[in-house]
Picture 1 (cartoon, rainbow, N blue to C red):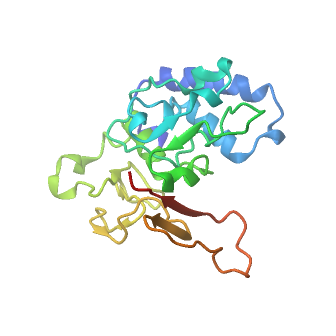
Picture 2: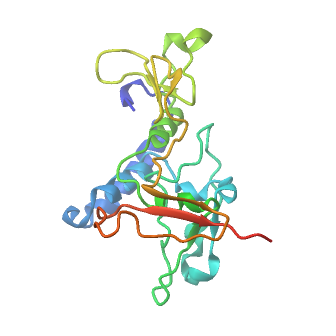
Length: 231
């Protein structure tokens, strides 16, 4: 997002940024990890938690019994600002799977509808493609792009037009993972999320072995098996 091009009300930005600076300046920054700082900057520019979107029930389940009574407001679904941006499990604004869990139990508080995506919750370390797309839409950053009205120059495959990309080219299309080309017209991978290194859907009786055993796995790699039983 190139702020000098943005035309939305600066009151929203300044109000949220001042609140952020008050919160962050009262504590020592050395204790903040980069993802936490980026998350709070997201709030400062007006972004809310991803799992607070009104359409979140189509993507995740909230396990209320695993959340302390005083923390349930953290999971309220009341933010209607997708602006044509798809739900994003890897958003820097998305809670992790055990966020605000009751300490005694350490159980999940958020479960994805598709179990293969559970591993993605809380995995964001920087802003995702969809985070950047949302921020650009919130502040109308591409409003001055002359090629917005030219249908032959519209970004395709969920790409978005940014005012500037740092290399001197105005109004380029920023493509999602898996798409490329000047207008994101070429799809090389239809999956937005990186697949797990192993796993799959299990619908029949089988045996699951540790991948690459007896070799050791790389730390923090994840596998995902979805075991589906017949009714």
